[in-house]
Length: 364
Ligand code: NAD
Ligand code: ZN
Image (cartoon, rainbow, N blue to C red; front, side, top):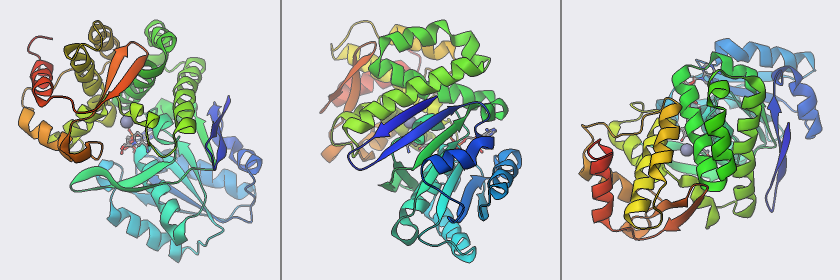
């Protein structure tokens, strides 16, 4: 299945299907990459033993010169230090302006390798090879970057890939917790954009959780299409693109307070969506979104409550520090109904407080 992302400056394909890693050379050729381009595969210690050799061999057989770098798996690797190490390795392996980077892995690899591509010699092209369900989201749209100790994704750039290749076969080795986490972003995309897609996710849960390839392609394509549409209309997040942050104001705060790694990104966003649905109801924007949201999230094996140890004050501080909080006012993406959201600025702190307390399990 092929989808296209179009921005004012870029147009690139997203390929989704089975067995695509073996077809990498021809997919690269379709976007104008040839073996004269030296390649540098970036991946992590979890993905490398599973797919690096296969990818490198396939490319070498097509005549490419391929180098690689492997960094420790996990969010804690998404740092400037990793960027510096990768840059050193790229330089030692002789990469230049005409080279290309392949990001083989989940969102961490995609964000870090994409940022390497954005900054290496002021920017070289790259291709996203997502291997987690969640990375269908992070690999599309061109946001790349690393974390700072004071906040997630605080150092970054916009750098669109030349191509995204999602080989759904790679999901077979993904731990079930990561699968569920990826579904959180698919659920998010459905909830903000398309009630029909929400219903499809409700009806196809069993097949999707069993990793039925045809359904997976459809779910990923649905998520990517939605993301591509939004990004096409607002590449640099001056307005509309911010709706993709549904669930993320609470989600990011939760990740920041609990410490990176306590929750997966998707789990934090899942809890965030339930919270922001409750907030929408509390502010009178909608009446009946939180129950269906919670049921859907729960049915995909995702958490929907804050840990009882979560401190409401700490979460509020983290939210104000989030880069989406303009001048300390709390901005949220809130539901108007299933399949539709709006951006609400200056949400009263008292309402947020009440919802966070409610999210700890009291009154849900
Ligand atoms: P991740 O990259 O850390 O992957 C999760 C874990 O799964 C890792 O341990 C990884 O090594 C392992 N893994 C990856 N593929 C595997 C496979 N096929 N089989 C077995 N194990 C595999 O995390 P993620 O959930 O993919 O992505 C989260 C990151 O994405 C966060 O840093 C988040 O900020 C970022 N993100 C970015 C955007 C964006 O627009 N740029 C959007 C959403 C999320
Ligand atoms: Zn996200």
